[in-house]
Image 1 (cartoon, rainbow, N blue to C red):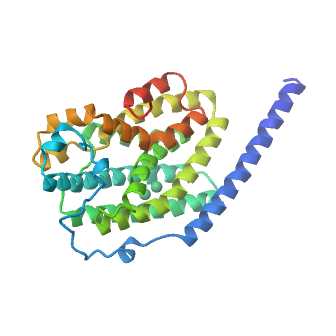
Image 2 (cartoon, protein in one colour):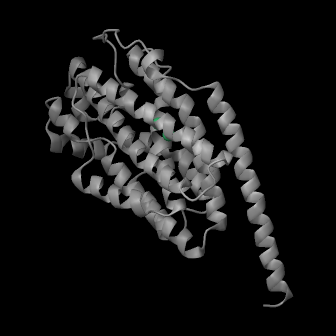
Length: 312
Ligand SMILES: [Fe+2]
Ligand SMILES: [Fe+2]
């Protein structure tokens, strides 16, 4: 190795030390924000309030069949019932994502110094996700619908993923799980047409989730610079596969059967809906802009994201 090789090594070392200092600074700020704004949903929300039969459980424009021919054949009661089941399906999806994320975070910090701010923040986030999953489970139960677990093959695929994924892949999955739902929840909690309990649940989730998105983004940005080339390539390809699974698994089609609709017809109409496509793209836009910016959406990955319907 000549002098230039040695210099390159020094530059890499300096960059990675800089990245680590930066990592600690970000974590310190997130810890301070967590200390200021954390909620205990069991105490914070009024769980005894009755549901109002005239209010929605999810903003109608965000319900999968909105503006389809089927939607116009449904009564208002049936539309509200669909919003109730879809809210439960999304809360179930949230629990699934959070269980995966908790395991990814535990794996992420397993080899890192426990006293670092980066690890202490990860533990704080795991605690947040524990409370969220309990909150989502409670609101599903309160709504009187079934829970909607992911389809068997997705459930098993995620088992492999959460056990073996590398760090950048883990953080891409995290952001996909968090950002689209977060976008919907930001429209839900201020919406006066929606049940107060759902608004409370989504408000708590939005406040605490903003920190999680920040943490995952900062880490992924670092990883896409420091990870070896094969890992960056792998991250791009797996991200495209996540996008595909995410868009298929987003609303569990059992909800259609449960409100008395023909499942196949409903799935076909939701898939054909221009409004729905726009909602999903808009929901993913902040994320896809970011992923594009840090170089995840290159090569075949870009095509896969387009096919998933999440990228224009
Ligand atoms: Fe969460
Ligand atoms: Fe989260």
